[in-house]
Image 1: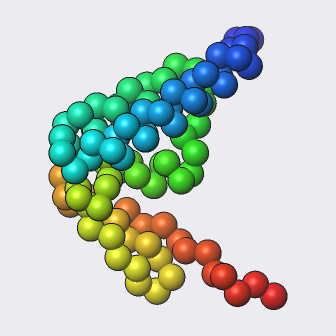
Image 2: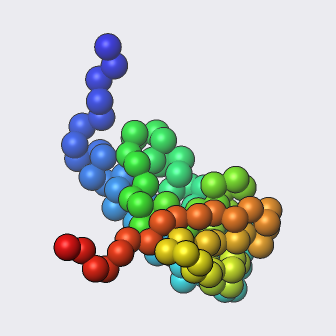
Image 3: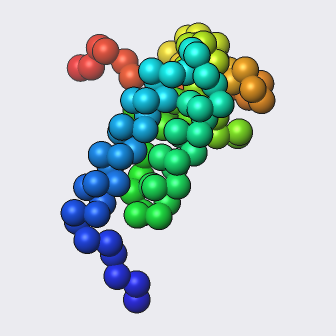
Length: 104
């Protein structure tokens, strides 16, 4: 049986993933390749330390080509309570259900 990584290492990995996504967001409009590289590094850190990407960050990565999806590199739209994000690099449409604000 494999041992899991120490908690302090997974905590640092989560922090670094957040920092890399923040840097990718800042530079996405200027340098698309660098933003994609930041996302690639964040995913590698997540795989090495067995840390999942948070769902709010996962929506900013194309499911097919793994490139960073920002308003300058993708097309966002809503239709029938579904968020549709079309990647400009590979033309894939990533769909995410929108939660209803009215709950009984």
